[in-house]
Length: 389
Length: 130
Image 1 (cartoon, chains in turn cyan, purple):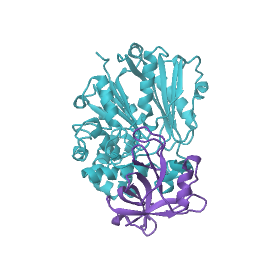
Image 2: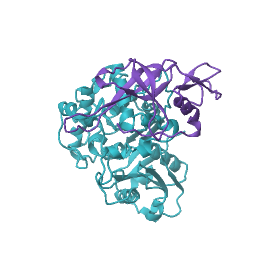
Image 3: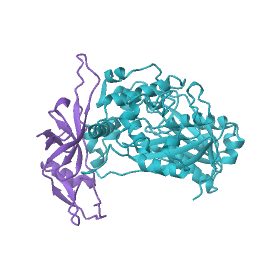
Image 4: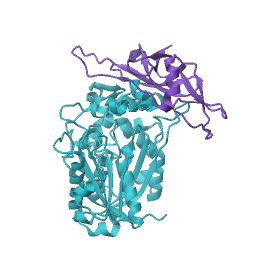
């Protein structure tokens, strides 16, 4: 099919972090209002709605009523976990191309942090993880929550390719360097690889500084037809390509778990659609639930050969002033954890050229990844300040 | 570590009947002869007539990790070793490695199945270094 002329016209971000004064649904409502205000468009002109609930639930299509939206032509709840943001932008683009809607609000909102509970408890609740039958077998055996699954994946990469914990630490450091330039980032104190090595084990081989934050909050983007976006207040961020990859699992000898992810298929598809190659990408916004996820995604996207991610990241290439600016807002490791809206929101800011001291000069092509489950779901977007030619 | 009792559902009932008897059951495709993990319902050729067969219980560690707690007053983190075990027949199982410190564990090490019977839940397979 022809690639439709669609663009992101608005970005709305609520307060994020240890914010306990609102429900997930209210974060979602607030984020959509902020996105419409950002675009300079009345909320009432929204005629499509995609809602991605986080892990805590509490938000669904019922927010349509709170927003006072009437006569939507397109609406759905989307759940592809960390790949949902990219999936929503692709679905919104397709709906606009098909004439179902002209302005689709895509929102993620979550409130997993409770005032008295630990951050880790939000994602390792036995009641949620130990489901009956085979689905709960890993959790019942001790692999409770995503930290365990990613630790198993990271270890396999380290054993197979010689990737080291210090190389993962280099990702934590470069991502923090970017966070220091972002007022929205939650972790802004400088760190060193030694700090990374000395941070406590979460699930070995993952240290505390290999793991993302958990945040309450909401982020929404407003996707419209290209001409409409170009008439609105903010610089339009054009959607040049999208892709997805959901590899499935064989769970038997020969599996490439931990070595190759859905990013390989997803990235290929998105870059083919956009007509670009990895070396043309100026800015990378990678879903970094863990340092390891950044590394394996960069490999699968083709920024280096498979297995050479450790060498790629070790010398600060991903940080400010490096050859491959990556996660320029501090990512999920140091910035804020809004699932796939973390990389997408920073990609929009970079593509608009409004990132202030962290602005990457070469911002004509921005690559955005989303990753869900334990490397089970992947989405990719290629964004640009320029319309497709 | 805290034990999280696991309940059976209709699809997993034969597997947990097996673990209750100290037998580790996996799936086998009659048409291809391949062995598949307990949760599998489809063979690589699309076959759906999988049968339950007993695994040898031997395997090797495909990858592993150690779940640590926050350090206690003495700085101990009470690590629990978890792994993906590749059974001799080929299927992978997520399971705990018992009576092993992280320093003793390496990918590729041989392990053998045992069963734990947590109160209020089904018996689950765990593995010990062989």
